[in-house]
Length: 325
Image (cartoon, rainbow, N blue to C red):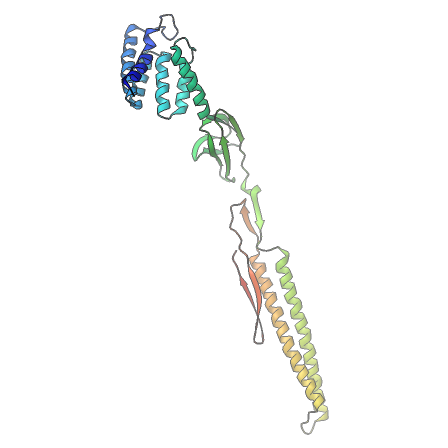
């Protein structure tokens, strides 16, 4: 910063005492000693300001205001807070600096103050909250801000934020909040109790395990009928042999064909019963896996797909199942 620019700032900031009058509200009750102290602190703050030591300058200006609450001195606090990226505090201080309008400020300073006012409006949004449920904790961007029941406004930076409500026995709710500078966004929050949000979910449609079990039982029943038919054919074969060949063994071509047909039918019956039994067992397993599970909202495990199959084996079949619950 050039020497001329530094002197210009110091001159503007130092103008606070030169333009004051005893009858002005910001000068009522202020002694000459207090004014002298404020002037000294003001000049020290100016020196630190032109050196970009805004934190120290802020401390000097705050001390000066404590001695003499002059709007022009307070506006120097605004300058420092803006440089330190503290818009909320700067906005509060600016409102106090402009409390009496343009009168206590130099014309150029007043114009600067109005420009800062527009700038700060764009940097601050307002969140209006409504929450009637008792004991609900509200967190904004992870930080506690209130406990319900609550109705009020919060100044926040523009952008996307997260509003979260918590209470024991209730589902936690998260709301995305988009705040625009200079605008008011209104949000209401109400939590659902866990009992209301609970759902019973199943791994499969409830009809599927029963259908598999019933189908297996039906197939096993058909196998049983085939086995009974094969047994009947074998009994007739035995009776034929016993009646026609009582003394010595004999077996006609027809009798031999009946015997072979009975044996084949018996093997088919055993295979069908094995498949039916394995399918029925699969249905029983599915009924077990399909027990209802209580979940709350979307906070539950993803149910993976299950693959089922019947694998033929020698003399029967085996049920297979692959998946997770």
